[in-house]
Length: 89
Length: 289
Ligand SMILES: NC(=O)c1ccc[n+]([C@@H]2O[C@H](COP(=O)([O-])OP(=O)(O)OC[C@H]3O[C@@H](n4cnc5c(N)ncnc54)[C@H](O)[C@@H]3O)[C@@H](O)[C@H]2O)c1
Image (cartoon, rainbow over all chains, first blue to last red):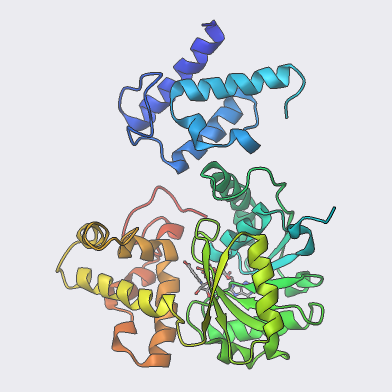
């Protein structure tokens, strides 16, 4: 894993642990744990957009992308790659 | 290729409160341009922020389409902004006098034949029809909160509502993917007539000390399958609006069960209006627009 990806997962884990007050593994199913509601997912959308300077819109805006720290990190990387390749937003 | 269904519609929504914003989000989220009118500029400020947020939240949970460009939002403080609309939804405060006045005003500025749709919870359509020049154009739609999540819409046909108005509203509802259930006119129609006295009774149970707020909701949810619990539902509606609607029901039916109980009245007096003010029967993290 690249250090950028690690930093991304660490940032998300930190945010989630602060908010949910439970330890969160990168692959933990946050819906099953009952810690991510749709309103909280919306907060995460806004957080990711402002922190990583991306827009989460259209088909990316689905709950499934917020099921785990890994899923969220993958979403951010996908959008960044797309923008980098000049096909995004 | 024919234009998308949303291209035929230009909606004006009167009132930018809980329901006005929710209905505007439903329409805009389906690509329909919306003009939102409120006498309170602060409400319009909040609506301009809340509307895109509500649309995105609805898209996130799959309640609104993700492939649609949102319809533009224009806001204004005068009903004159409704000129050029293909339909008007009135969602101002639950008060017959105020609704009659604003419906008459808007009827004077929209193109001839434009359907006027009231989102009243309880006032008979026949009563409001007396205020407009063409009563055939007036119809009730009782969107529920949030309008973009609840697919069924109670549509109320007044005694003078024209067939063409019923058809026009069916077309609009189909463009926003809602399913109409057309019923006849009466105080509170079906849903408010059944729900609001029950919510009042739930508050009375708490007032009398029979059970706590949490216990009432837990019993109604866990034993009787009520989706959100009556007191959480009351908070979602807005306790001021619930009291207004109960008063309308009581005046029209004389049913003592519709007379708002002291606990409800006290909460409204103290400004604890439910979700929209951050506190009602429950505490919420900050006011939700
Ligand atoms: N809250 C619900 O769950 C719910 C559900 C179904 C129907 N309704 C009905 O929808 C209507 C609106 O309810 P709400 O809960 O949104 O109320 P609300 O109190 O949240 O909002 C009403 C808005 O209307 C505005 N207003 C008042 N007079 C006006 C005028 N003359 N012109 C323009 N704006 C004006 C107010 O400034 C306010 O912003 C009511 O008739 C209510 O009974 C409410």
